[in-house]
Amino acid sequence: MDFLKRLGFYLVGMSIGIVFLTMFLKKKSDETGVYFCYLPNCRTLKDIRSKSMYYSEEAKQKLKEFQLDSTDVTYILTEGNVDFGNSDTKSVPCKTYIIEAERKENQYTFTVENCREKATIQKVAAQ
Image 1: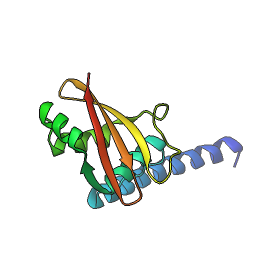
Image 2: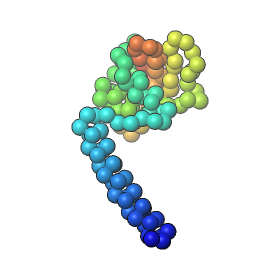
Image 3: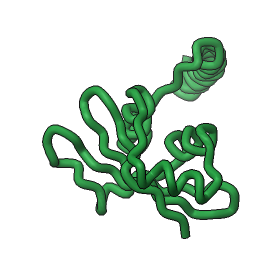
Image 4: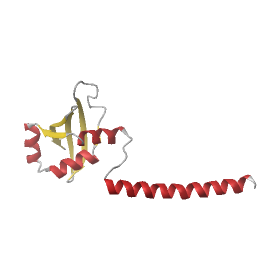
């Protein structure tokens, strides 16, 4: 066989394999609720969501003022963007992250203190 035929067979087989692999992984992730996080933003938010969540008194007042409930907080901690430039990622024992997200036609900024055992929302701001 010449090179072009072998390359064609290889590409056809590889594309069929990729299609089956994506279908299999998508089905598996939908059933178990697991998804793959490789980027720093996704990994940070997933780590924060995996811990017990606490709220400072200031954050509780602001959440009531902005009429945000637990589903809004969960959405922001899932779909938000971590501002690593303004976050304190080197502090010990707790790191402080600035998370920004748009919800209910407003831009919200959460300041989250991420410790080993728990995560605490310190401040909530709207723009």
